[in-house]
Length: 549
Image (cartoon, rainbow, N blue to C red; front, top):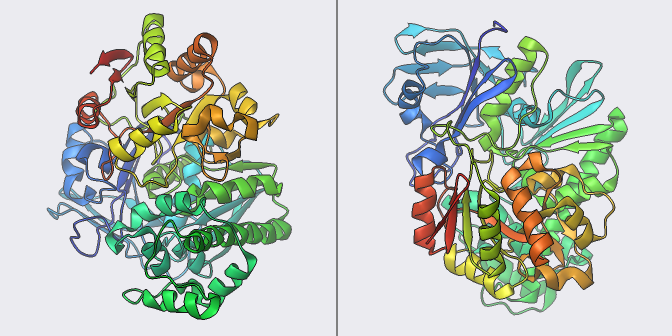
């Protein structure tokens, strides 16, 4: 490998069958880094317009051709998956085969690669490491004396892995499937699917839905013991009556269906969420005591669980906690590229969250004070406004560049946006965005954790302030704030929030992703305009220019 060469990283392992929806493999993505900086990044879904798309093995050549990368020289790194380590282009022009891994390597492994007509040096990085190192593009180099953890549905040889980084040395502590029952709660548990009313092909949408639903109920210790003793009812596929019968037998509760309004069903969901949170905190406590690590880098799909994240932060186990905005599979190529650059150069530069730039490299939101005044007025008048500025966010959550914004003080407006416009379920809350000083105002906290800039934590809102953001608060009195601490975080959003606070007395907005149900977040101005018209929004901001609809 040559530190002067760029690094091209690809996550594109093919699914086992040609399912209608991504199934075992999802969220294909690709990244190019050079001298420690991200030059371009693409989540396949953003350009294909297919949610969680896994067809990079079909489109790779056209993407590289458009970027004039077919004849360029770069270090080539692939990311593996639990279902395999081979990348095969549909046309056969690319084939990469990695050695079989019986143990988890602590670095890249050389494979055999046929690359558009010739042999090429190429490497594989295991799924676990790619997850862990997806932190680096957003936080820079690893802090010494850190615990590095990945936790998800399944990676290469584990669903939970942990390493320690001390004195410049990386060492695996463990990797295994022991925590599978807990990560399975959010992507492959039959009881959870029954509660949500989902089919197995919808597994990628279940975690967010279940996390939202679980906030409606209450944790009950005895219910937790019962669920554990029944193995969380995780294997009752096609025979959900087993759970209904057990509820009647053990609790005297007659359930004829999985009624989402039923308090028992809601308490079951809340208890499952609490057991998940307890398990991850318990595991991290054991590892911290074993290693004495001061910092935590936490990644994988399970790190999207904001309730558990908040518990980890509030536990005080670590001085600093780092989670990237693309902590699930959408960040694997970034992680692989970052690991490679880190090994080559010893350094990775810190980037913003706005990295989805394929095909829109020229996007540059230039806005005037008049535009800020106009958009603020629209929002104060309870209009729904879409935002498509600059590059898109890396990961699944909109952070102001591909967002729909709305007045946060109205439950009716929130319901209209969430259920009518976006087609989301009745129980799923929307999140607020606010200046950091106003997050403190709503929560009473003297400090706001940096993870809130990526919408990765929830906050208890002061009872007397809850009505002020009634449309962006959950049933349990919490809200998943995105905080904006300074102008450079997001110049447009900072100016807009400042204007709303100073001129309209509005201290927070609803911020939800700019897409309808089942569709990816918008990428281009054309996507944004089309989606805004489809949802019948009142206006859209396209790279700083307001368009009334």
